[in-house]
Image 1 (cartoon, rainbow, N blue to C red):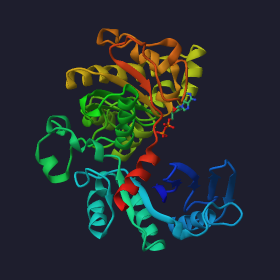
Image 2: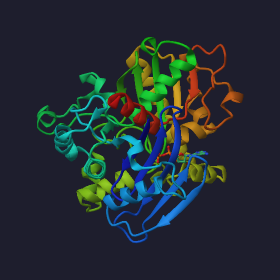
Image 3: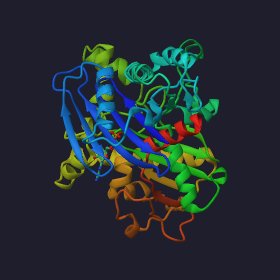
Image 4: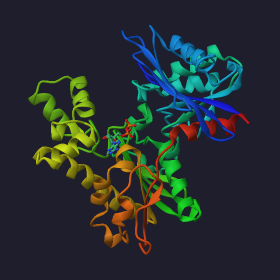
Length: 397
Ligand code: ADP
């Protein structure tokens, strides 16, 4: 069975084509600058052949048509014809309270998605657009939606209700939803496998540390808390997002700097985090380089990043009444040796002991705690696309 996975953004679209018998990626790539001058499609076959097709791509429909043409092209393609694609799995950012699991998208599901689009105005509309275009181009193929929020729908009310007037939850759905759910769910499952134990008996803290970053408390296989909230802005320090701050800072700055709500929104989402504090870059590698050269703001930015994760680990250990494993994933979690070491240092009292040699590694699924460490620590490279493909296969089988 061949499944196409699509992550449709407003001006870009990522895709991967899976052969589900082997779980191999047959082809993958990216469409960039949709609706903007200089648009192009990047394509990489499973064998590693890479091509770039520069073409005017005014909208998602033209982009997905080009993508399908490439997949079936005689020269670079990996499919004999489009019919070989049995289903399409779509990454959807926000499922609100309507979607607690992956689902086949029918008219009713589209309607529900449009109802929650308010909660993710930048992400959900292009996600929905990707689905509609695929429905149009492949009318007899099932479309499946996999939601970033779904895994966290198991959180108890005390973890998701904000201490605001309750009417805002009732009227607008203002509550915590959490994101990166596909990743947190996947790495927790892998961690249980690595420990050769049942996920349903474990307390796991998963740290998804990428450009966007979040922590989740996964108790008995279910998310019971996570650091992102109504939007992905809450929680950890991120590449350009501030994470937790005193909300009173917002009216204070609005007044002092004479800003509009959208200007402050831009500052909190795009100009804060590692970038804002370091003044150097949102990319942790650049910040690490600057810190190594003695740049104080870069040093502080990294310390803040690590300290925030450490505090969440403490909080979630308390929330779950203990912890059996701490998992690191995504760009920084998988690759930054220092970040993992700094986060875990000082947590020996919880029973975590880092194996420095094992931690000296990047991007591999490995245990990084010592053999006799009571709490296990590990790196698990995330694979959200594979989860989307698997969920899609399960639903259409
Ligand atoms: P997202 O998917 O949220 O855009 P990623 O998971 O790709 O983000 O993570 C991006 C972050 O990971 C960047 O801060 C980058 O510096 C960091 N990163 C990626 N590769 C490495 C590496 N080899 N060493 C250190 N950090 C890395």
